[in-house]
Image (cartoon, rainbow, N blue to C red):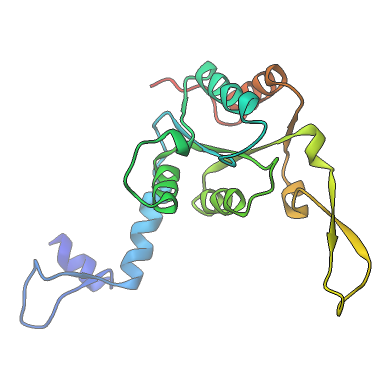
Length: 193
């Protein structure tokens, strides 16, 4: 009966004269399933950490994030520590889907970090942005090709769109731990599972 209702609504289809199991999920069916999946509250305690693998601040950032998440009952495991045979990006997207929320450090201005944060935001997940304080307003010199301009210009290290978010600007590991723990507790809440 449920399959007939789903077929009538256009969520699934099967060839004329054939009965299930030859079912095809239609485009509207895929959207409907996505809505169901996104509407489910994320109940686990995993946290996806988006960070540059070669981040010079990793010695402070990684233990600070792990301690902050643990203080609120969550488990943060950066992707590079995750043993897997999958391609990095496939594994990252899978881990984001499994996670309750994302902590994204934009200190090193890597496109992959912005992409992972955007993917999580598009899925309706919370993203907490962090950035080493000294890097947040830093500018770098760039040289445009001679046919465009012969002078040097500067651009911000942190993408201007990221500055629209409330970014935790941290100076030390202790500063990061304190501020991130408070942000997690205020915006996501303590994990009680």
